Image 1 (cartoon, rainbow, N blue to C red):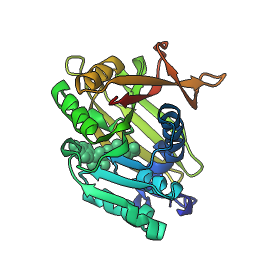
Image 2: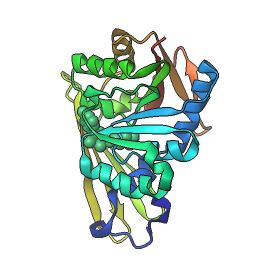
Image 3: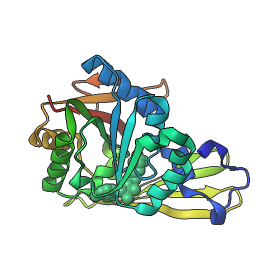
Image 4: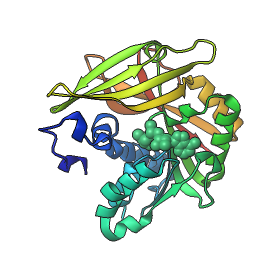
Length: 271
Ligand SMILES: C[S@@+](CC[C@H](N)C(=O)[O-])C[C@H]1O[C@@H](n2cnc3c(N)ncnc32)[C@H](O)[C@@H]1O
């Protein structure tokens, strides 16, 4: 678990990039609380089964079954070494419960046959799909894999700042997380993103993660979800602190100001 990793003597050569990624960009506990709240409100019960697309280390799957006595989770990803890391660090420590996490080395476009209460695509991973036809095909695969009363949750980063060159540094106690956005091609909306980590001893894990993305807008995603057969798409917008930072509280909205940089969840319901 990330909490057990010693960060006081971090140096690039010995750094665990997955542990640093978890500390910097993931918050599975908040994701699960949000999904439970919305699902319970809509369906009158808590969800039990999860499909995590683009699961990477499948930390969300592991936390899902750790939290839910009858929970079961499937993680889909193409990159076997990352999934192995997740199995060894997050699933194995769960003991018997770990048997209820199933890691499938698979293209998310192929989906899976077991139907679930909740499917997710988080941290904007669907941006690997560069054209609308493939995005719709992906959403169709998700919809087919949902129970009739299931839901698909995904997230989006938007606002003018999502379309420009950015280097943003966030300091953590023993390292600095660096988010880098390269220039976006205005014609195709393709842009590279990079994650690097800098350490107190001056060393750097340069571009530990690289993403070759299409920067989808929120209305484009909503339109594609309806085209894929979803009956309703809700937008959950993050509230702000008095200093204008995101406060982690997401509420359903019909409209929102296009602030410089924002994060939202979408909830797509098959019925
Ligand atoms: C940004 S990471 C996401 C990790 C984690 N889900 C999260 O929320 O932070 C993107 C992952 O998507 C995987 N990936 C990219 N294209 C894929 C595809 N077509 N099918 C399955 N996995 C894919 C990559 O191997 C990588 O592990």
